[in-house]
Length: 197
Image 1 (cartoon, rainbow, N blue to C red):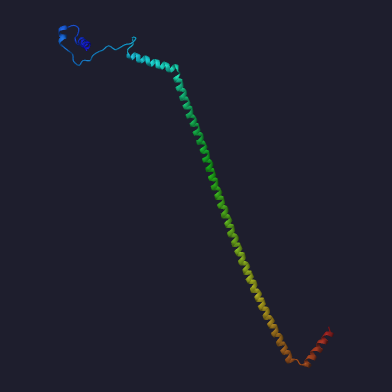
Image 2 (image 1 turned 30 degrees about the horizontal axis):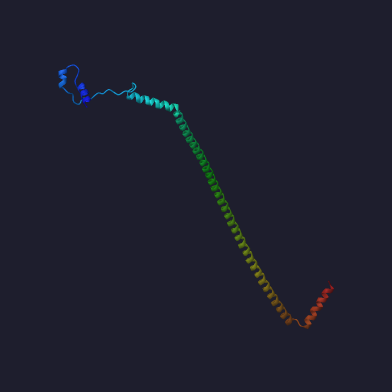
């Protein structure tokens, strides 16, 4: 401590005016100490030297090359991932395009099936209408044939009845008007008519 006080006195007392310097003391003034040195280098120089040595060791051990190699491998891995992602994207787009084409083809096939079904339904309806018309025509013809047959049967029955009535009337007339003498004259005339022919 005595040593520090003597240094303080040396700093406090300016060189020159000894009487004035002995009584005046500078309070709060910063103290200036000489910087410590080792081997002729002060602290900032030692820090700079240590940094140079660290960088020299890093370069000697090829650390920048190792860092560059690690970065290059990381870049290559990222490029591979990007290439794989691009490939997956192109495959996904191809699959999407394929499914869109399949969907369009399915839509086209569905439209074709619907059109074919409509055409078949129209054909079935036309066939049913034609069959119904033919059936109606056949039934009409059968009814007309039955009516015509009934008319013919009725006409035949009327004719037969008329023939029977005419025969009965002729028989009654002949019985009433022809006697045995009239029969003999009629037979004689018929025989004479046969001989002239």
